[in-house]
Amino acid sequence: MGKIRNTSGGRSKRPRKAPAKAKGLRIQLKGTPTLPELRGMVVDVLHRLDDLGITHARGINLYLTPVTPDGTPVTPVANGQPVTLIVIDRYRSAADEHGL
Picture 1 (tube, rainbow, N blue to C red):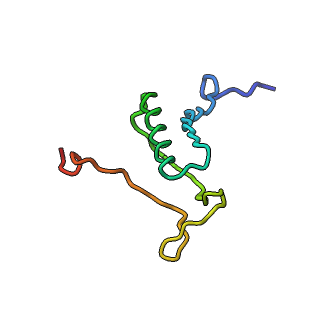
Picture 2 (picture 1 turned 180 degrees about the horizontal axis):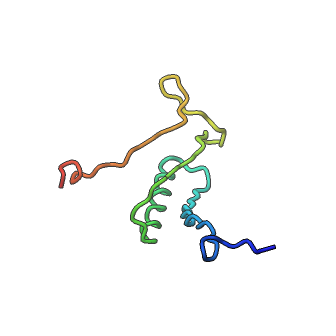
Picture 3 (picture 1 turned 45 degrees about the horizontal axis):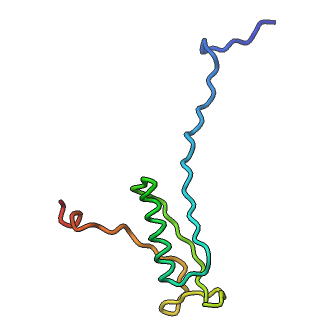
């Protein structure tokens, strides 16, 4: 019985692997800070990102659990409805606004 030959004349090609997906950077803020303390912590994170040479970011998600001073979780409410999502678009600079 004869051999089965590859009709392409060469080695069979394996499917290419997709390029590795870039891993995100995990940022963890610990404790139960007040909002002013949280603001300072976020500013510290931004300084550290700047020190790492990071100039742009995408896919930024921030999850937090609102709590009372004693640590009991609470649900924020606006207009009688629970608030579960806040979306803020990129701020446009004055140069962007004036087409410069």
